Structures are given as C-alpha cells and as structure tokens.
Image (cartoon, rainbow, N blue to C red):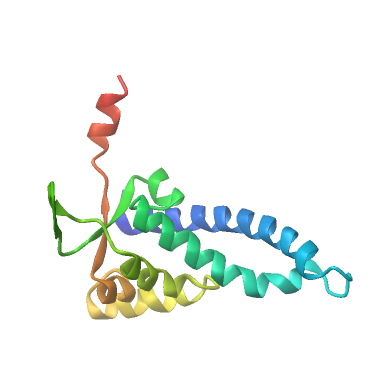
Length: 148
C-alpha cells in the first residue's frame, strides 16, 4: 500500500479519535463554563478543538512516535537528522518538531494546502519539511514474528 494512502487513512482515523475526545471535553466544559445555561455546548467546540488537536498530535507523536491512526496503519514519525543518544542514533522527534507538524491540522482543512504546497516543494507535506521530520513505515516483520 502506498505511504501517502496510509497517511490519509491514518489521518481519517485520527479525526474520529479527536472527535470523540472533543465531545467529551465539550460536555465537561459545558458544565464548568456555562453554569447559567446561557449558551449551547456547540459554542465551545471552536475553542476546544484547536487545543485538543495540537495536544493530541504533539504529545502522541513526540512520546510514542505515532498517533492512534498511524499505529493502526503501521507508520511512524521520525526526525530526518538523528540526535546522538546514549544508545546510538536517536530518530525520535522533539516537542517543537511535533508542534510544528501539528499546526496545519487545526480545523482539519489547512492540511489540504499543506499537502499541496508540500508536493510543489518536493516533499509530502510542507510542515514536514519545515520541522525536518518524515513519516516512514514501521518494521512490521518484527511485530508479527514476535507474536508467534
């Protein structure tokens, strides 16, 4: 399967995960913020969604190397240039790199321009080039051989 297709499917899966979290956070925000029942819960989506998207993608890609969708599609985020670690080369990304990668994912539609501009510049996404990261396929042979 094509890596771009895997990334697209992973992004759609992440959309569903973030949407589920968005409903939960909005539900609690409704009770804490709107004690007098003046506004409906939908008014809080505009404020909660960008924070939730940035937190979801930044934290998971930094700490785990992938989001839920990327894990399900067996792809992960790596830094293009490794850092020296105690155990050799470290290709994990920093919080800054993860945050830069996540900026175009706010409100779900700027990523279209990110992909188009990235294709024009010869990369998959423009923000991958800016953050000096790349998405690669995981080594699935290790996963499936250890399961036997």
